[in-house]
Length: 569
Image (cartoon, rainbow, N blue to C red; front, side, top):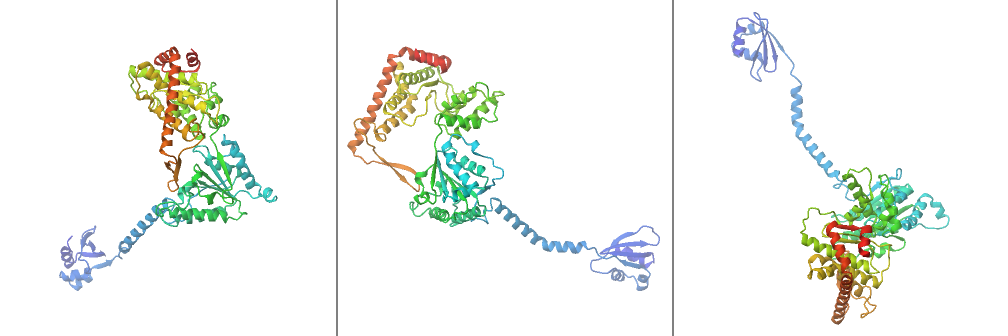
């Protein structure tokens, strides 16, 4: 109902009651049971509105007017509207702080140590999980005894080494051995990488070192393990324009913390590296890293022990012989053997077998050494024939020479980048090699090319890698091992090592042009003599060469008794 109609009804005395709620009017009439709704002008009372529309005071007095109190929602909405922008800004700021603190509080804790701490309550790795490095384990058992029974050493006036440096090739188990020490001793274990100390901000590395050692003192007795310490512990004073002063400050702080350690804190520093030659001498001196524990590549017994560790809990077929596998994996480190067992398990699962058999292990060895089979590579019959004679030449020459390792397998199946391969298997681990063995190895390397030239009257690019290896070996015999009759027991050339790069970048010649010419002539003589020997063997055993090559063309792979019978003729 319009407000003018309400005024007209009021003049006639038909309006009984008006209820005001804000600008809304609820009108009750005498002749109607239901109420009607009307609206007034904002800011003007209903009485003034009726007066303006001609309703007299007496008429207004006859009408009952009630005013409802205004709702509190309006006040709250007004207040909320005023503070909402401030709340929005605070929420945005909080989210930014959360995001900045997410990645190890990088934005607000630059100087805090990023070391991960493992408590010794539930050790996951013990000495039983480490195999093939028995001497290193014995060295570190003393550390465990000191952490468990320090009184035994202190009573005799002994001082446990403050720092122990684990040195070994990649994959030999340095980090695993450090974890085993913590697990055996049952103490907290701080683990950090050398590269985690240094940041783009000056002074952060030294601050993190101080924080790490402060935490270690609070958790004493404990072990601090710095992996790849060569990232921060290289020789000081070498570089271009002071570009790594921050790393030197970090190293200086490590030196100060290690040297200033209280002997009663029972904190042991373990560090691992595969480049001990580039570490700063001040870091290696007694009082800091007192001991150097070398983790060498495992021998056949060590490889068997490592295999036993990694096959735990895996179903093995009855034909699996771990000692045979250990003999077939010379030069493998712990990480290689772990990968080998995993590859064998994957192959067995792919073939829907319930147990891992010897066949899977044998194939896994080839896969780790030479790469996966390239079954999709299409090779013509002519190239297949050339490859067969090439590999037969390698196998026959190696078999006939007394100082070459026995040939275990010959294949013309493409693997990785190789079109075929001949796999010799050493009967035992060797730590010394004599000149006669090197000369036989040179002839074995050149046997493939000699067979190509003998049979096809031409040579191919298949021997490129053989020639490269043979040339390197011959040059080492002359320049590094002093095995040249003409030049005598001397070494030639020294490698320049720049510390800030951490690797050898060049070789300086410390001999004359005349001597360089003699070196080249000696390398050439060794190669030519080896090639002539290989060719003579193949000519005198041409029937064996033909038999092995033909069988390779038919079966693609030869091994075991069949290969031995063909080589024996």
